Image (cartoon, rainbow, N blue to C red; front, side):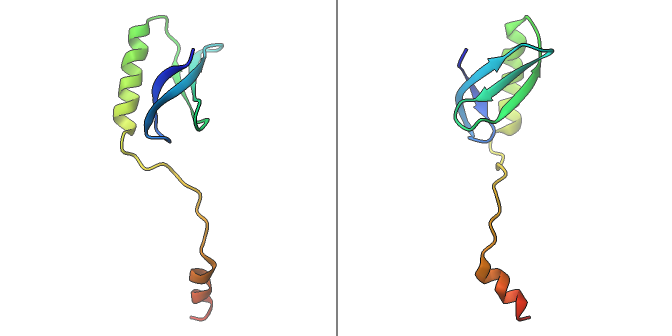
Length: 80
């Protein structure tokens, strides 16, 4: 079931796959692979609300990125 859900990492509504094999619904972004867990329920309206609250809480957040130090900047501290 690919469904458009907001991805906090991509900062876009992206296709997600869903896995409801346990006590939680795990949705995984098809673009970046980030996943989120939501409580399992049989009421689709609850998911609509949870997805909307997830988007409101994460829209505009800066995703963590890998820090790669600049050797030139680091070498400046060696001479200090």
